[in-house]
Length: 305
Length: 305
Image (cartoon, rainbow over all chains, first blue to last red; front, top):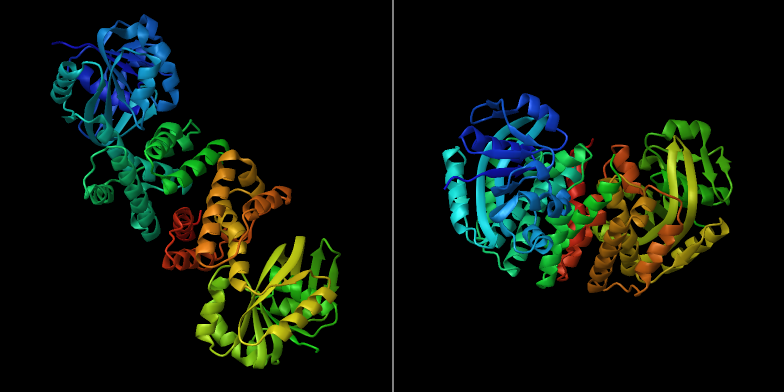
């Protein structure tokens, strides 16, 4: 099965993963916004710990109406723009297309399924440090593994082929059955580190090695684990310890929300904080510490220094 | 009964209240630190909404060993220096002296009673906006009422005279029986506003009028009310609403912890956050939201921008 790919949102995530697939010979069509002209002229340049490469010719578009229908649509933009998906996606979807949300947060697949019923949807989390450092220029600093899981519709066969394609492109992929657990496990790291790096203007290592914020990070992680379990996610008892040990070994790092805040872009507060808080509350659990961070972020979003 | 007064810590609080007593003719001996030479030469200048005044000659000391023993010792320094009280106070205490802690936080009278057993101790809260703006120069911007309550030892008669002396000096005073309730009620305002103005680099009005932080402030106030009640404090159901309405009417204001942080002075985190959290925990209640703020402040205390 030779799959055709669309990448919606060609930033750090989309540029890197789409670039890897294109470099491995797969047909990848990139939807771009501000970088369209530049990438059309100059292609995509990926500086990666796995080896730098330059795609001199890229199938680039600035409007999804000009794109071909694709078998797999990798949605890699920030969830702050997800309301646009109901307009962006239909022109590039055929009957059996699978939309994979390579994004952060919770309930995003549900929201898309409400906006575009009958669409086959999957979700993916990216464990990666990658940033767009200039037009068509991606810097991939560390890691890179994807976890992919189905949400709705019949996507099993296609997703397995997607996994094979990524593996052939040098990307480590895990296929999971339970997207809810995948999403909550990602939140265990994302909720403390994304918000606290913004609120305290600090990098991951500072938060991890200062005894007060280390305790705060762990307390919040445990709150997210409890919330996730109340919402049916399966998370092991050692998961928080693993996340802390992993972060201790990471190169000091600014998570995506910190980069967004510093660049005065919208932050993913709704999908990463408000949605989990509401889903947990509906299941009977109050994420009290997470709420503090959510409200602080909502304030800071309107009072940028 | 003609009381003699000592003021330990001649900043915004000590300079204003001690200055009012001295202006009204009461004998007041001021212990000073960095401003000693200046105040000895120039006296105390108080710019007050109630009318400016200048005490040209002040009974100023730089060492409590040189001071006379006084009937009433008003401790007006920051609680971050309270460990020094066991050395500062003994030279100025006679058998019937009453030490009044005009300070913020919880458990501070208990800590002093452990350090100096058999001392007669009372506590007071000051509802006032006053700041030291220069050496021997106090700016009193708003309010000024004191609430005084006994802690241990036989202080009733003296405290009632203290109240009369303050009233004769134009300061509004309430005598309360239950110091525990007085302390917790003060914390209902102090815990959200002191910490959040630091963490979010914002003034009281910004926090009160932004819908997200208004909710956060109210949530934290309700948490403090619950904690206080669990610890035996008597706080009315309408108290949080009153505090918000009062803050809405206040001139935009930086609480003492924000001034301390901006001036790179130590913050009163232990007495204002850690002590209430521990006391509430011992009584069976977890102050989860307050803990987030505490841990953020402890981080910021070590990572000043």
